[in-house]
Image (cartoon, rainbow, N blue to C red; front, side):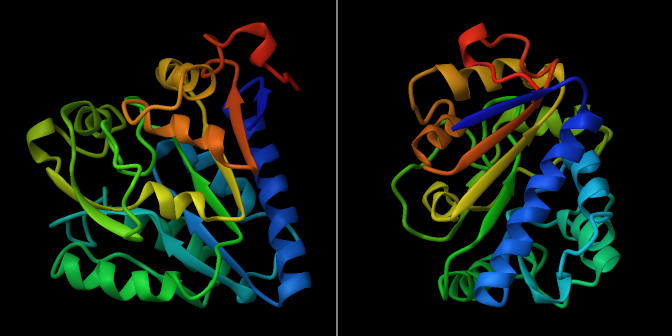
Length: 250
């Protein structure tokens, strides 16, 4: 895992976007199309703003998969990850082929349908974040590192639900759904490349566990240590607890 540290979240987002755009151009040149997995959340704002402004990305040849979604939350809710991706990525750049997870009506059918599409061929690049509790997608600790199912239905833990309130998506933890759909850990690791965009001081403990701790289901993002092509993009605040030898400061 390569660790890159930037002065602030804007510089982080710009660097991660340049990296992602280069991968997408290369994949479409070599294979004619590119498959991506897209994360959501406030941590991805600067990254998506920069990525959607990148020149020369052949978005009409990009196929997008959805990383996770709440169960029972309507598309019209401000916290809907479907709404987030439509507004901040899909409609902004004109992605024509995308697979959103509908957790509002029949979650089991949604994960079956999208799972079939996902298994057709490898994902070129997965954009992910890391939660305050170390979660990867909505795989809260203790995460399931064994299932081969592409998507699973999970119970969200208290720390995860409180993070959503802290980020301003809900007024109170009682409003946060208790269940969600998430891409499984093993499915995320099947991507040819992973870039993790993780700004802010509130992520510092999780970043340290991910980078310097043992690989453990209690720190789900630590599994990224076992992926052969992962780059972790941090800002000064999210990297503040790392040992100097861990840093590759830019």
